[in-house]
Image (cartoon, rainbow, N blue to C red; front, side, top):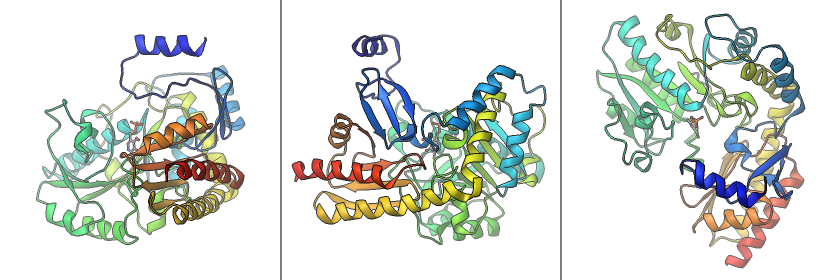
Amino acid sequence: MEMKKLLDDSEKYLMHTYNRFPVAIRKGRGMKVWDTDGKEYLDFLGGVAVNCLGHCHPKVVVAIQKQAQRLIHISNYFHIESQTKLAKILVDNSFAGKVFFSNSGAEANEAAIKLARRYFKELVGQNKFEFITAINSFHGRTLGTLSATGQEKFKIGFDPLVPGFKHVDFNNVDAIENAITKNTCAVMLEPIQGESGVKIPDTDYLRKVRKLCDRHGILLILDEVQTGMGRTGKLFAYEHYGITPDIMTIAKGLGGGTPIGAMLATDKVAAAFEPGTHGSTFGGNPLVCSAAIATIDVLIEDDFMLDQCRRMGIYFKKKLEELQKEFPLLVAEVRGMGLLVGMELTTDGAPIVTKCLERGLLINCTAGNILRFMPALIITEKEIDHLVDILAQIFDRLS
Ligand SMILES: Cc1ncc(COP(=O)(O)O)c(C=O)c1O
């Protein structure tokens, strides 16, 4: 379909929930995508941290093709080979004892919220139901996860929200301690706040929060929807901090581009879910689980991909810091871990994103002035250099 007609039809038939760029992407390979007019782009947005192995990784494509020929869907009333296999891989490579599969990050977080409440009510025998989450957090857009989210702008027009969520300053252990009451069941945090602009807490923050939760007998839920699946240079971000959560949620990179999320928990906490207490028609379906198995296989094979992510993350930050030195009036800060990288500007980021798009680069601006980069872990130094060159040219014209 011709691009103009496609854009007109999108406007006419789709609900206007997204601020879309006037571009339709048709094809992708590795770090590159092409629009319907054949124009090529380098993708530093990576489907918002989803395309961790790049677009259409051959192993993921083959896994999907093979599974599609064998069995696309079967209900969770039956055991599913690829779902069980994927659960075992996740358990073998994490703190967790059990896994529940969902279709998205928000649904994984919904499952976590339900599990934490049920754990106290049904297993511990205490009516604890309150969650403490962080200001500027993002946990999803369902009513429960919107209530957990610590940003008012996403909540306008949707009240009444789900009761039982308190928001406190991120990176402040005392603020959590002061908010704990006899009703508190869990603290829920992103290890790094992604959506609000790649905010990295002090190195001992999560360790202190873990201790605090233990002291008060409450659960620690880590939302690794964005930071998980190798994004920070370890399979899960909590591994950087020498702690383990009681519950963790993942999604985005898990399925190599297919829609799958997961909620992982220790055996002790997971025991609160019994047949009929939670479920999903599509969650953990054969097709997405096969894609996820292929994705994780590549991610953890010989530590190559995670090592590449760490090395490229360091290089990326160094190059952006050089840019900051060159344009100190435009760039306030560069921060990142692995390939979750943010550059805080002193100016509105949207025009820079548009200029990058014109120059064949897909990037993202979040929270108004923070350029966020979440490229595939297969990115090369040359591709980073190309982005930095173009940013330098754009900044040069602005300054
Ligand atoms: C940390 C975090 N949690 C949850 C979500 C929601 O995930 P989804 O959009 O798959 O529902 C996101 C999405 O950006 C996220 O970054």
